[in-house]
Length: 184
View 1 (tube, helix red, strand yellow):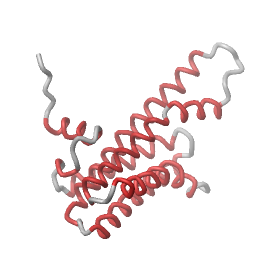
View 2: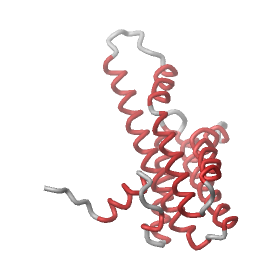
View 3: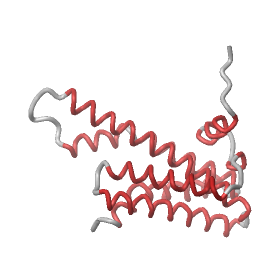
View 4: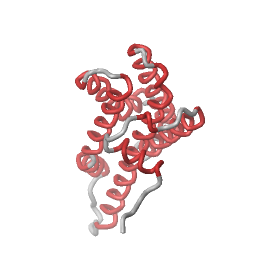
């Protein structure tokens, strides 16, 4: 018996494993708003594990704005403005899924280390956070590859240029944006 997933789920899986491009998504402003909202929510949840709620909310909104700005700039420079809506949906959706997965696994790691530690002098929080970052680094790399593949399929830059856009973008969203809102 072969399990067949619905086409929207197959399209999302195709985006995550680089087999399809953003053209499988409909050109919908509503879908764009939902995907950007999911991306902002994912960043919020991830940052709320380490920072205050205000800083996490600002990071989520700021990350969504930066993602949109980079996609808009790439569309403008490449001349493929008609692909902006679908590409931004795919970038936000792919990023949200990876960030939600990272947050979930990070949460499980924190809980499992807290529950398994029977001594009263457990691991300091910073050590657990560093361990989680180390173990979940492959998801960071996967996010870079997803963004690079989507930029490559959408705006037709070379592979090197796609990675030159994707790597700093993921780095900025994950690390730089929360630093900007340090005062919150």
